[in-house]
Image (cartoon, rainbow, N blue to C red; front, top):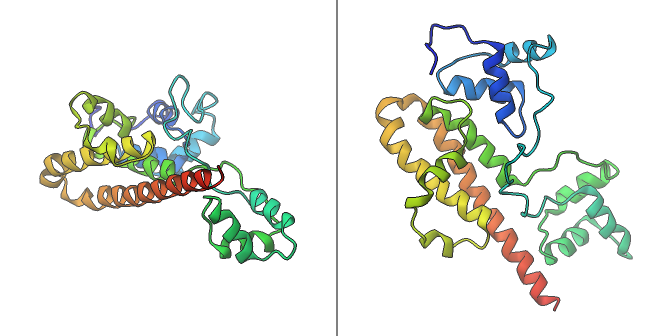
Length: 234
């Protein structure tokens, strides 16, 4: 890890940018700061505007890496809701939401109503909530490792040989299972390394882990609902 007195460089920021699935000036700055290399996101944004960051090769997911969340169902889109709306004789926000929910695609009627008011505008760059939550965990992991490019799944892979198999029976999908195991491992590392030595950063980590636990529970419920809907249609 570089000396703290050494000024951070655009090359460091570029390396972190390219390591992230959905990078931004703010996410790069957070990862670097958590790794002990504090920088303001406006500085990273300025480097980007000045062309000091070569970011054309950044992609989502990263090249050569399997996206662990690729098989999870994406969030419902406005166009999906519009299609159900158009198929109903007397559609309403409640009836559309109910039809989608019964098909295993849970959504609240107020969301449908909002999309209807906005004339079903398409939302770009859809991402499963669990993937988004684990990206937030990724930004907290450098608090443990001191490396701004380290991800939660790196911790998972490093401990994979020693993990217990009991979790595998509780989660219906590999992505939620592996995410849950990762959070358990990170919780142990948090207790061993962060609490004794960096107590002020505990809140950042616990918030990210708590949000990821909630996303896992919702993803499991979604997957189970989809399976029940599929079984009912046979």
